[in-house]
Length: 321
Image 1 (cartoon, rainbow, N blue to C red):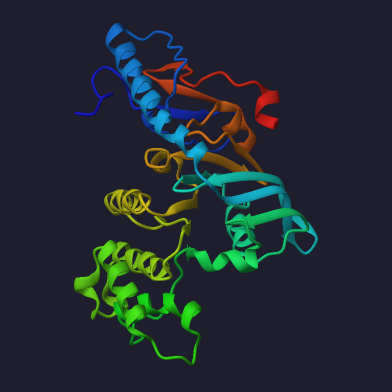
Image 2 (cartoon, rainbow, N blue to C red; image 1 turned 135 degrees about the vertical axis):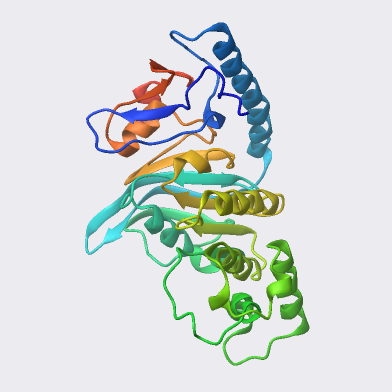
């Protein structure tokens, strides 16, 4: 039985004057709980959640002493003269696990492309491990959104993962024992080595996503970018992928983008909300102001039929800073 099953309905976010509802798990709750109409049992549950988050935030706080691996300052970017990103400021530390959430069309994929050097900003500065994107992206592994492909194409798991070494070897050079070792290790990390000879088209969606992650890991990256890594997979596969990413995060900095806030907030260390502008506090806490800024509508938390807030207070001035 979950911690909120007895006497408390599952929390949800109601977006007033909007056509959408956004789900959120108790894992993102922070201190400063103001609970209206809750009984003693319910209030005690929320207090325990807050205490657990305080412990977690102490671990996140140690990241401030680690080196900076990604830095964006006043970055603007777009297409055909139309801005998609406006005034983006972001600093990511070594072995952080950042989740960027936001509505479709809010610029999440564009942000990844800017950091990969695939799109040149119209304004601002981007540094990857203290270098330009052209130099720094060789230290970055990238898992793009899943796309349709010909499942009858004759390529197996090993060959897909081996593609991750092309950036180091080039198209006309032979693969070396070092390349094969890197691919073996990558497939082991995602628990797909036993399937290395299977055609990629025979795999399930979740298994293919693990292989794509292995392809990115084969580059031996210091930073891993993922674009909607759990799109079109069921909840069980989603959980397994995020648990895999948590293990990888022990050695690799991870930044992923997603529109699924209900899951992402349970696994990442810090969260940002993006809709052209980025609302980011280097914290796991998702504030109402961040959500309102990203989704352009006021949002209240609903539990047991009674609106209440479980986030630390933030002023509008602080969010814009």
